[in-house]
Image (cartoon, rainbow, N blue to C red; front, side):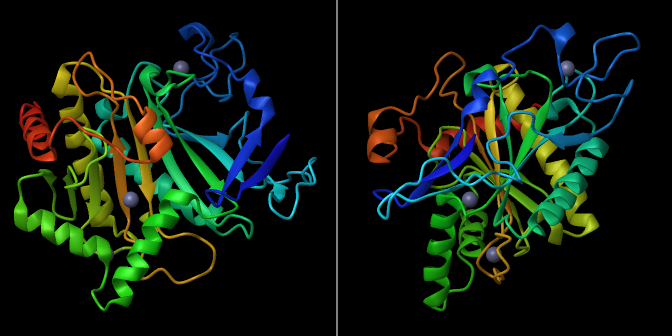
Length: 327
Ligand SMILES: [Zn+2]
Ligand SMILES: [Zn+2]
Ligand SMILES: [Zn+2]
């Protein structure tokens, strides 16, 4: 069952996908469904002995392309809709114990191409209004499978958080001030204190207003609306900057750092987002220290107001130092 219900108090859709309760939960390594299928072994999601990068439809999708009409009729105040969309899984490597951080730059560069291709292909579907590329990494984030992988959701609507960002960018632009993200990026460059990795075409920094202690935003220097708009040089640089940042993240506390990685870019609803959407990646690691996690508690969840105990100027310095330690 895939169904959307409208929350008129927050003016956002909530997706219900009841079959997801049967998801595979942290299987032992020998039964990983994302590993290659070994000769004579049990069939995994990938019917090959090895692979580099693989993409397939999520077996437990939050949205499906052929979602039936909603079972609940809803009301004028609380309408329902079919949970129509696409959910894909992107396997980064066939090496079960790898992470994005340990992959070669060349592989991350290939992954950038795969992300760009999926963005274009899913975005071209008439019912997909937003292609959301993301990764949940680590048990602290609630991953159910350890094999290195990310996901892609093709939503039938523009989700609330990117929408809020786009609305802010639209207001900023209508005041004649150009692209909001270009403005933020130029301030971060000028200030410099929160910069973590500066490549030729991408910059990674802890934003002035970080919501997580080690939150990092990776911005395209050029005002490119989506990952599909990046040139070959920009794609190489994105791979390089991601690699350096991720190695730095792992150096920070001396273990493979959990995080959520999300991409914000132009919706695919057919409208023009030139100068409004500016391709960037956001990382939210849950760790405050090696042992302590930041929980989204009453203030964050119920009021939407984040309270932080470390300043971005301090965390970015530690992070920059950890990136510098990279071999
Ligand atoms: Zn595996
Ligand atoms: Zn811009
Ligand atoms: Zn963003």
